[in-house]
Structures are given as structure tokens and as C-alpha cells.
Image (cartoon, rainbow, N blue to C red; front, side, top):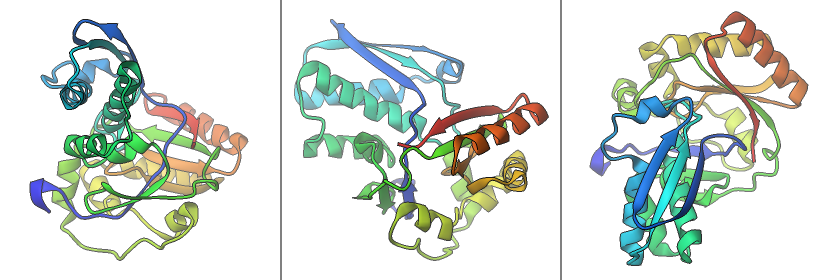
Length: 259
């Protein structure tokens, strides 16, 4: 596809926990980054949150500013869409702060210009994505809502471009249509094998979570390197988390639920 993107099919689902972004009135656009993964963004000359804020202000013809504060709790280059979600959150927050409509078509087009995942994050609802991921069909996420999930990253970053370059373009066939959980269970992540080849610890996480039992679904998230496991109840999730914490205390883990 143009722009270095790849044609794909994916299911977007959103967790209750992640990065946190706040905004308050100011004379200019400012961004403060804190949190456990703030250091990973320290060298970014053009942070995606600020880029989204500047484009939104230009789109609306705004002269007002805002002081944005990002609490970076998710690892970077982890296949979680954290940067895209932060950019989308900035647009929604500024729309609220300045009195604009974040759902207007111009804003959706702006989101697509920021990155393939940003339109889905702007809506922040369970969706089926095609094209480069920005052609969206909203799904009924009832079967996913409230479902316990464990996110695990073995402490490695994996840029998306590396994974697609290693993928080779083989098409394993379309995702099954219908209810998102059943579609996910019947499907696969075609980027998982090349990602494991590039970062073998991903395979270790996948194996440990699958061998532990109790999970309905264990799969790599996006282009990696984070793995997610879905559970039918909180006790099973927390038991798996405790086992991983004992075996690999240095791995990043997040217990949360889907929305």
C-alpha cells in the first residue's frame, strides 16, 4: 500500500487501563511526560501527542493553548497502540476543552493522517479494521466487555516496520466474520511467527501462558512484543500473573479488563 503501509484485517479491543492524559487551559501548547516509560520518549523530537494537538488546533483555527500531561504507563514499541491511543486522547481532550466536535469528519481524517491505528483509537470501541487498519466497522463488544486480561511484555521493544519486513507478505486467509471473541478464537496473528523470530522472548511468554492453562485465548498483541491472555474470571488471570511474577519478576505485566 502507499506510504509503506500494509493491507490487513484486525480486531481492535480496548482495555480499561493504560496511559493517562490530562489537559488544562494554557496560553500555548505544552506537553509534560512522566511515568515509568517516560524515558523511552525523551529523545522524540516530534511527539505524537503534540503533533495531534498542533494539527487539531490548526484544523479548528484555535489560538488557545493547553498544558497536556502524559503519564506513560505502557511500554513503547510494544504492539499495544499506546502512542496512537495517546494521540487520539489528545484530540478528544482538546475538543472538550475548546468546545469542538471530535466526531466530525474532518477530525476523523486528521486522525488517519497521524497513523493507521489512530482512527480506531479516536472511536475507542471494539471494531473490525481493514485496509491499513483505518477502514472500520464497529462491532458489538458485549462478549468482550469486562473480560479479565493479562498483558505481558518480556522487556523488549519491537518496531512495527521490522516485523512487517520479516513477514514476507504471506496471506493466511481472512478472519472469520461475526462476534469478535469467536472471530479471534478462530483466527490467528500472522505477525506472530516473524516477531518471535526477531525477539525470541515473545515465544517464551506465549508458551508459558499457554502451558499455564486457564486462558481462553493467548496471542501476541498487534506486531508485538506484548502478549495478551484472556480469561473467563479474575481468579484465573491473577493466578497466571502470580506464576509469571515468580518466574520472571523483571517482565512487565498489567492486570486489567476489556471495555
